[in-house]
Image 1 (cartoon, rainbow, N blue to C red):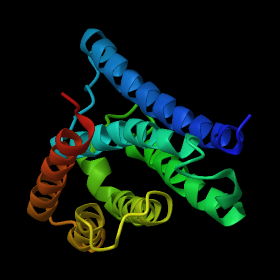
Image 2 (cartoon, rainbow, N blue to C red):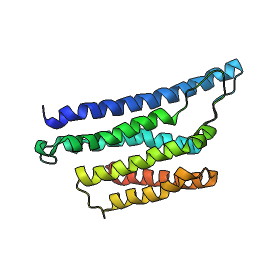
Image 3 (tube, helix red, strand yellow):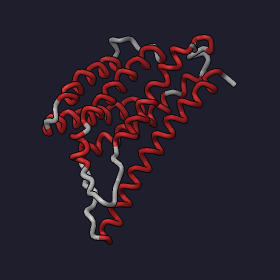
Image 4 (cartoon, rainbow, N blue to C red):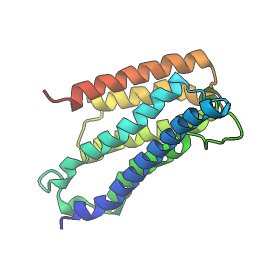
Length: 199
């Protein structure tokens, strides 16, 4: 067994748990809406900005998993290069993704109505704080594991995201969140199309 195969087990377990957590929360929200119609309860109110963040976190976890594959190649990342610091850095993104998966959806209750718009703005500091931390770890991963130059398009786009997302940490302004998150989502889709779709 190569060192990466051993080290990656915990990383991919955390990512898998994050994916399960997010899917379980979404499934619970959808089933709650189905039963709400028949029982006369108020259904969960979804919010498109929150929905974009959910999609980006879900797809981001899959992309992280996908992008980690080259690290399995010892000609790309030799076994001797791995140390505790690198392993902890490698763990940081999956742990942050897991925390986001846990925080993104509220606990659904039969007794009270859930409004995801209210939930998003009530918790915007935590959600945006985690999004910023995730961008920072993504930048470090690019530089440390994939030997990207700090001036490369991928690194500059991460730095730009750090600047663009920072105001959302401090402001509850609905219009600001809508514009910035729409730009973030458009950039996310563009990045997926450019770097991850092979024809």
